[in-house]
Image (tube, rainbow, N blue to C red; front, side, top):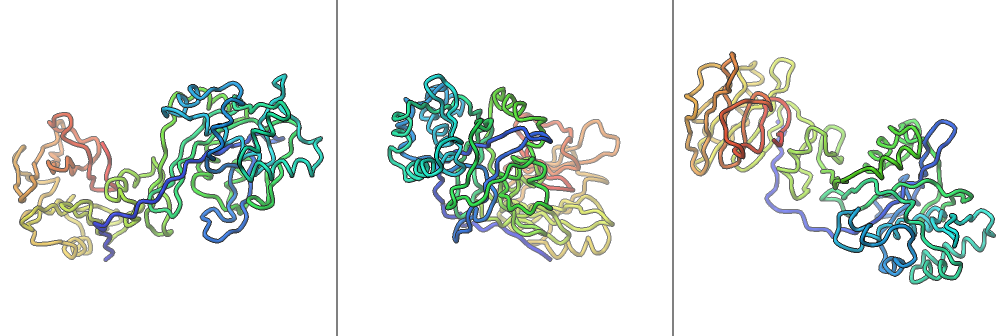
Length: 421
């Protein structure tokens, strides 16, 4: 039998770096294409060899370039990103990183036309990129010396991702989209990035292509694949009213440890039982899996016929347990449940049959389980509320009971994962 119980020890807090990424788009013969850069192979780099969008962490000098930005001031940028101040730092960082890593510079001349770099001598362009990469005032000096201004108004804020808890390096990254500047050719820098590709998003995520993709790049590419052309994506981004933070969770399963994204069945459960990112929970249920959902609740998943069903042990301070079962199964199912009992089972409750009276409370010592009859159902199903945890053990997430608003925060179904109500 497989047992997974969260450790009470929290994971060490890791610093979160703020970053900006620029997703550069163009229209190719078969539709929208996106610029991908392959990162150099490096030790101790979780993105080593991965295909990514141009981007990186914010620099202390990015703020000094606010006065050289066109079309967006710091107040507007901060409002768009939902932060109090210094939102323009992210726009500047996205432009700077794109120039450093891909050789594309979103800057305009005195007439507002995007600068054209393809006619610049290659050695001169390399020297400019190296200077900017070294940091300091290089980008500001470049712009002031040539009369250029950063064309940040061409960037549209698109997405916001936070690296999952438990990862060795964590980034709080704002993603922007922009149309590729004309008469500028993408060139990897040869140090951080060693190859560039213009790909249709669907081709980039195709396993046959063989790209190493991080979770966030894969998810964004799948979203980009829904747009008919590049301009449609830009317009979509500009019309977004709110852009929520996306933070995946790390969990184990048959395919090994991987990030679980919002919207996947296990995501809400992971946020409850593994808030510190210890990666000791599961993204897929399996027969024989016993999972501690809280100090009071143990879930056991077993096969009943050909279906996976959940049974729950609920207990309090006296080490007396209630077994809540969806109904009788075969002997294998029963044996799995019996073997998983965390202590003496004093009560066995089923959602079918002759339930206890509606409203009946079972005192478990430090917690209370209340019996509820589902209203408006002819099959006389019962459900059970663990009052202290506001968790309802029910046959389905749409269970109708005579509960006041706020009494239930979670549904513990008899198939599938915990559901945030």
